[in-house]
Amino acid sequence: MTALEAPYRTTMWQVVEHELIEARRYWKGVLITGLATPLLYVLALGIGLGTIVNKHSNSLGVPYVQFVAPAFLTAAALQVAATSATFPVMAGFKWIRFYHGMAATPLTPRQICDGKLLWVGLRTLVGSTVYLAVMAAFGGLHRWQGVFGIFAAVLTGLAFAAPVLALSASVSAEGQAFNVLFRFVVTPMFLFSGTFYPISRLPRWGEVIAYVSPLWHGTQLARGAALGDLSALAALGHVGYLLVWLVVGLGLARWRYRVRLTA
Amino acid sequence: MAQGLTKSFGTFTAVDGIDFAVERGEAFGFLGPNGAGKSSTMRMIGCVAPITAGTLRILGMNPVTDGPRIRARLGVVPQQDTLDIEMTVRENLYIYGRYFGMPRAELKAKVDALLEFAQLTDRAKSTVDPLSGGMKRRLTIARSLINDPEILLLDEPTTGLDPQARHVLWDRLYRLKQDGVTLVLTTHYMDEAEQLCDRLVVMDGGRFVAEGSPRSLIADHSTREVAELRFAPGANADAAVALAAAISGDRERVEALPDRVLLYVSDGEAALRRAHHLGLSPVSSLVRRSTLEDVFLRLTGRSLID
Image (cartoon, rainbow over all chains, first blue to last red; front, top):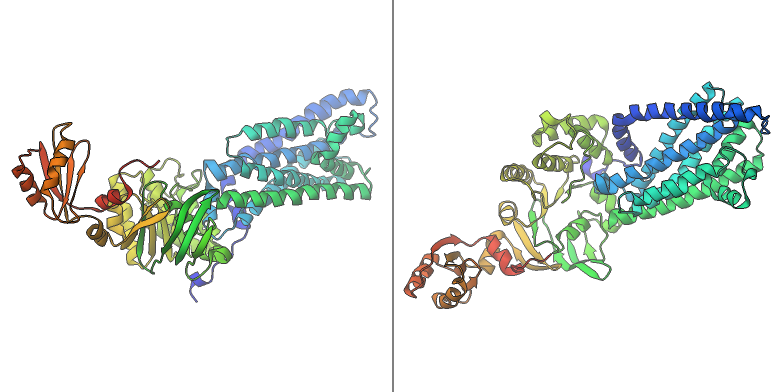
């Protein structure tokens, strides 16, 4: 039996390896941003704004920085996940076309799609760990169980990235869809997902946005882990809701990758 | 290998029921103008695009069920580069081998050998972006060989390259053919087809309009020689009418172009002499052998298709 009659095994990890080689070139910049962003947020909002909020005897039960830190963690994860599921995907299909190169090899469109999502997950995992470490260093962590917020953050990132991958695999016009996505979906989610204050302070329509938004569910999980005020049932509900986004989104993404790569 | 192979996009039929078989070790070419269906055919053979109708077997396997297994044994040089321009030359070869699941240790030696083959050893650490078109094309071909393919699919491998780069590429492809690799290529360069192909088909509008070896295609669809007569501007059409008397035989013919008249004849010099006897005096004239290009233009027409 020659080597050619026994094809080597291909898996989605080879798609991750492609991302890793690319990451060799940009990891320093990403690390600096990854350290600076939580630092700025925790200083400006947690400690700066927090000083004012805490002065007026806040009703949250914990220092303001400990209230917002888990929310910033999930919001940052969502931002990172959305970014790596948009422009780099456009590059793969259109600008650099490396996906078309992959499609000519034994890799299947499904492996290419799954590998991309796996990479988004790994990237979010590393990013969230750094983020949490910085916040913890500035007193953002109420109790040690708050580290489980990392998993909430990764799950939130994956849940949102999956349908975004489907979108990115479908669009052919440069960037316009992504501008809409970031301005009218990602940013409003950040503002209406109980990041800065409990959503009970929002008008009814704002609460509805929060319930739909995967970010609110992720934030509830991360905050629950940090503050210990979330019931097991509620936690299960949030995880379930995020998993629905992930599963449906992945199905859509696989479908769009297949259509695009076999056209 | 293929029977009644068809590819449709909505109501548009790009490939319209073609039959062909390629032998192992053969160099087989698809010739045709833009939009003839060559690339669609290549994407079906490459097990990337699904077939709409007909049957297709590659290496004895069915692309519908065995796509990845077939692709594992193919090399693909696409019409439009899919190189990772932000990566280095070496990284491009390495990661492509990884897509085939080749072990890292095995890849190192393979990558070195292919860098040598593509004459890119001294550019191994350069990113792809600044490379010249010819270098990128050589890298694409080197990359397509990473898995020691049994069949190499080349979609317009030398389009856009300067003559030096084309000849280097042809030389490389020739060596692969000597090594027993089956070459399947598309081109609209007749000299490329004559250089590389044992057998070729001319495609137009999704169908085959002719097939055979370059030599037999010329014999079947053109004459042995072509006499080109250039008259004063505006006088070519009238001269063509007069020249109809200068030809004989069933395959000989006259073609009037805006700037010259072509006589497709078995003996060009004799035809020129007959033209002079008819009292015609062209500004300039030459006699050449028929080429594949004459066949191509005869079969697919001179008007632009796209």
